[in-house]
Length: 212
Image (tube, rainbow, N blue to C red; front, top):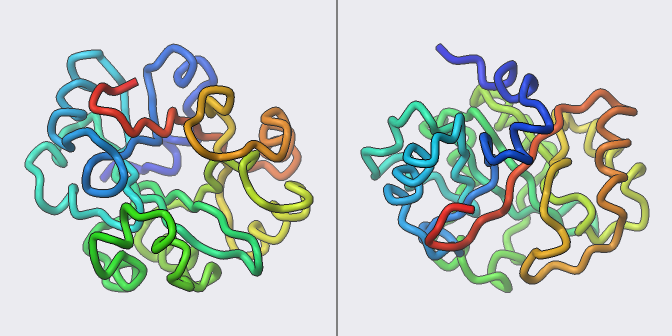
């Protein structure tokens, strides 16, 4: 069985910059426009090493689509969650989609995957969520941290690490991102990753029909 943690840990900066790896992609199973199968097909055609489809609060694509068995896919999901009074996104990679403990944190309806305001409502327990991700065989990664509504990324990182955080999204296209306001310097994420020995991940947060 593939060790996703070791696999992701060994990705290099150039893998993300040269579009060999994209660990942050959304489909129409959540708030994206693209079809799950079509995006996987594009990844294969463009010779990606790996992509991760990380729809908000759901892994239904991995359950319902045949392309989920593609060797180019790393199973993933992006959770909307609160850390105290701070709203954030937590990526999970390498998880077993059928894990009962993890499934408790999945969306109960389609609205919880695609409507931003509604996604703010569920109060997932962050510590229990990270534990469930680990028990499902995966790793927990702080998504686009420079967009996080926290005063200090370093303090936030320490709090998340105390709960079991494994990694941080370092390679991310902040200048052209669609809606979020960037509160912190993008380079801070890399410094935090190196300071606390966190796994460095990256992705484009693609929401389009064309994989980019």
